[in-house]
Length: 96
View 1: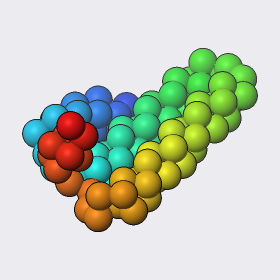
View 2: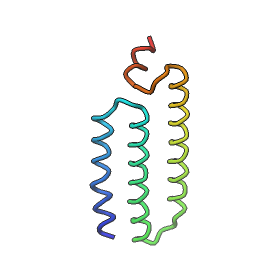
View 3: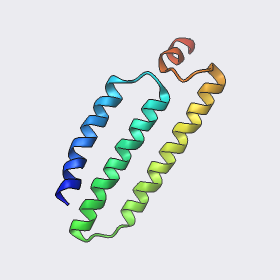
């Protein structure tokens, strides 16, 4: 249990740093956000197991993570069809 909690405390700041400093491609950003969401799910499941709460909240959180992933992938497909790449900086310059 301590190992999972320690991993939860280490993984989330590392993913946030990766998200902040490597913001070139949309696909890299989406993968980092999904990894942050799965880390939160791991931490929440540890909290639920320790306090013997209902696990319905984990299911709600997992549904929201899946909806966020589908929305991000649909935005990636739309952007690659319209602009031909997934560079976020070219999207900002073409939106004038």
